Length: 163
Image (cartoon, rainbow, N blue to C red; front, side):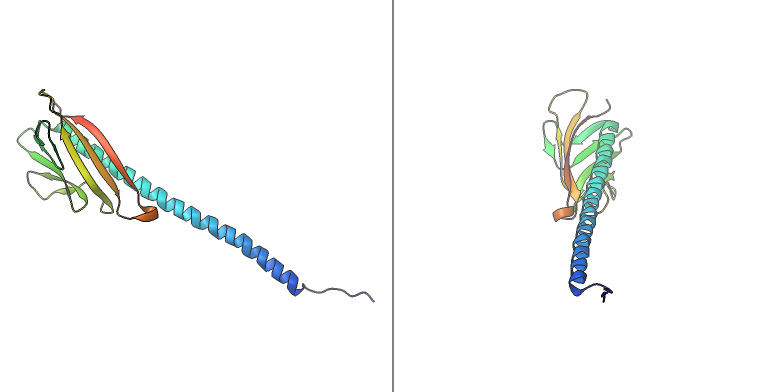
């Protein structure tokens, strides 16, 4: 008499479950790595975009200025004060991890989004006695997160006033 097999044995079931578990472990691991890389990429993108915008805002203010009030020639400072035509003054400075722009001692406008922090702003003025003032500056900015998703950059620029 021929004996027909119906169904699968316990050993076969265990082997199938183990194979499926190995495949699912690989898929889940790949998905988690992709999510992690996406979060890192977004942090980098945000810092670079905010840094580029802040750098442009600082450079545009320097280019539009009639003269530099502070720092003095040959000196450096963590803030920059500019004088514009008509007597308007603007100050760029660090406060509470933010890069700020204030006009005529007014309240001030934050130049970076709240989750992007500025850790350093350094403005150095050339000592040459010329008609054109030149400022070399460094801005260090990054995310307010530490660890795997933290990202920071240092921007260095040299800009002259419009004269």
